[in-house]
View 1 (cartoon, helix red, strand yellow):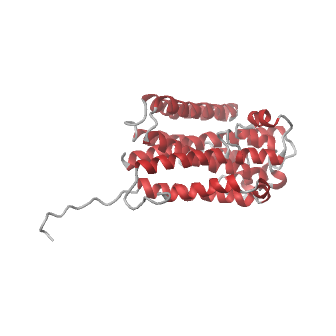
View 2: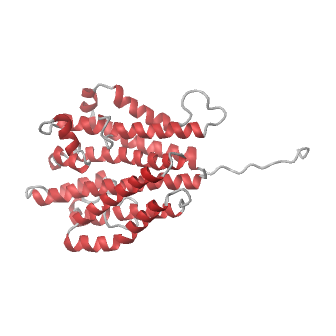
View 3: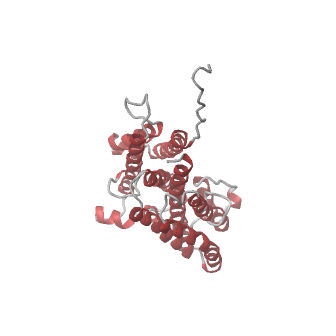
Length: 316
């Protein structure tokens, strides 16, 4: 597969997942501000912007600033609108390997964003967040239903998995690092779509240790950090087998596979109490892992190599 197409598929997966997760975080954040009259809005907004990689002066942080930065900014791939637009542009360059249904879904989503922004500003942003969640689920549902499990699908799911690890870590950080301005564990579970699966698993009230354990370590919930790392590792293993090169016969062939495998192994074999005791450090390590793995994937699969120059025999 051409590196250009592989890179487009990888970033489609990342951007669509980023839009979905950002919509979930913002939905819970805005609902929390409405329901809790005692919350310090400026501090909560400043904490959220900092954790999402867009820090600002706490005195200037408010809900309008949060929505402008994380929902409506067309130029930033970190916002909902920017991420969905970037996913659509990447899909334009990979139409030969995407099904027509996926392209149509991304195109319709992109074309509907101006109307959704207008409705959000007029009636409130929750309709936009619901729209983004539904359209993101449709894209990945169509990918599962209409794409062969070849390299195209592997790069798409690899991008989604790495982004999911990063965003779930950020959601946990909103609870762990924000002090008395932090959302409740119930809201954190709702922002990841994990509230009902958690209740079915533990059949009781939300407990902080169990909630953190569920979002980090549950093997069966697809948005948990462990499940996403395991899927990313599986994708990388398949891609390495398909792209094995001379000199990579021992151990794991790719640096990205090593990085993801170390993070997954740490979660699998370290004592749960030890993980939870150092949770802020672990979450920071997981976010750095995603950045390093993404860079390693780029260097391994996407960086254009210099063309070979064939020298006629006897010319040397």
